[in-house]
Structure formats: structure tokens, C-alpha cells
Image 1 (cartoon, one colour):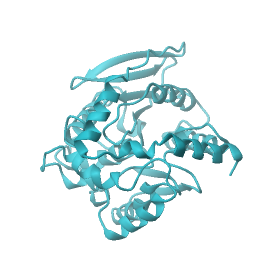
Image 2 (cartoon, helix red, strand yellow):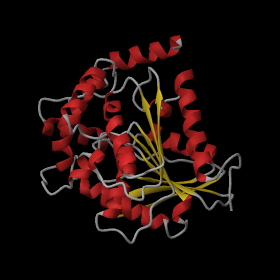
Image 3 (cartoon, one colour):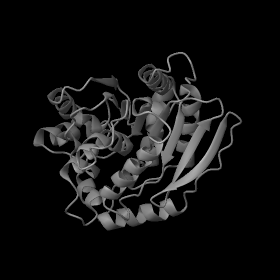
Length: 312
């Protein structure tokens, strides 16, 4: 590991980012996030290569980053935040960089959060956004990228389609970066506790609190939305998981692998040794920059973009 990476890990630890996921009660945690989200504004992006606009889906904003040089391929870009934090402006600027480097049009939804709604609301809005994309792009030309809880939502599109939305075609490719899911077994929990000693960002305890957070008082939330490793992945498109080896959420990777094998999914699980949660989208040191480059390469290779930025 480079010195810069070790310094970054120490800075994250000193900043107390991990402690921000903990509170005396679930309601106190949610209220803290509501206050933080209220200060979080959608940035005013500008780029001469793009037509950047905003639409509303179910009353929620969706940013559209559309290349002026036409392409017939698009990505649904799902930014995480533990289901309780809105995308930060820095994350939106990274989405623009991602669109430039992959050549894909991008749709970035500000989906409903579990600060105010059960998780079913987020799934409903993301599905509605995907259907908007299907008006202009073939399903096999739509990829989905999700980070952290966004990775959960990206993978969850598959069981959601099976859950009463069978008229919707599957997307062409899913890239799930550090996908979050709640602990289902004692074995998962023990692995998570071991990784908790290395993780500088996400405490293991939050993945138990998250059950209450995602239900938001609604016991009818389907189990697969909370324990995604138990979901129906029949007909799931090619899927890549990308983890850091030193993050608590990596504890559930074996369960995801078993689910992919059970349903015959074409998948791969890639692991950045010694790396932290969602490391590819924080390209501030060599190791994380390598992760960013890997993310871009995977997306281009699996969407047919190859070395060409645009496909018409």
C-alpha cells in the first residue's frame, strides 16, 4: 500500500465517519440525516459535451446527463448512502466524470430515502426511472451501476421485476460496488464483526439497525429488499461485484456468490485487497485510482462500448 493510502485511512478514521452511522436511537440517527439532507443541494452541472437536464419521477428529481454526440446506450447510476443520505454534490460530479469516460448517457435518481419512507418507495421510484429510460434505450443497452446501498438497489431491480413487474425486461448489465445488505445468518454476522475491526467507514452495528431503518414502521416490506442474498435472481443479467477486502459489507459476499450460483447467473466477484468501502469512487490515491479505472473498464467492456466512446 502507498503512504498516501495509509494516510487517507487514518484521516477517515480520525474524522469519525464510522461513528456517524451510530446514534442513541434509530430516530435520532434519522433526524440527524434529515438535517444533513436539508442542506444538500443538487449541483448546477455544466459541460459542453453534454445536455444536462432534470426531470421528475414520482415527484423526485432525476438528473439526465446526455451526450451531445448521440449514443444508444445508457446507465442508471444509483448513488448510495445507507438508504438515509442524499447524493452529495461531489458524487454527482463524479457521475459526470463517469459519463465522460464511459461514453454512456446517465440517469441519476434522487430516490426516496428511508428517513421518511419504507424502502418500497425507493424501489418503486427506481423502477419507474428505469421504465422512463426504456422509452429511449433498448433494455440490453441499459446498464446499472450502484454504490453501497445503491449497489443493493441495483441488484434488487431483478427480484423487484419478478415481484409483480414481469412485463419489464431486465437491463443488460449490473455493476454493484460494495453492495449493502442486512445480515441473515450468524456466520455472516461473525464475518462482519471480524471485518469491523478493519473497516474505517461502515460499522457492523449499522447493518442491524438498517433493518428497522428500511422498514420505517412498515412490516410489509418484502424480505428480499432487506436481505437481498435471499432474493430471486432468475434471469439476472451479467453481474459484477466489486468489494474492498477491509469493509464490513464484504462479509456477505459468499452469500451473494451462493445466490448467483443457485440461479445460474454469469457473475464475477472482484476484491481490492486491503481496500476500504466503495474505494473505486474515491480515486485520491493510486490504489483507489486503479479501482476507478477498473470500474470504467468493466462498464465499457460489458456495455459494448469497448474503446469507442459512442455507439449509434
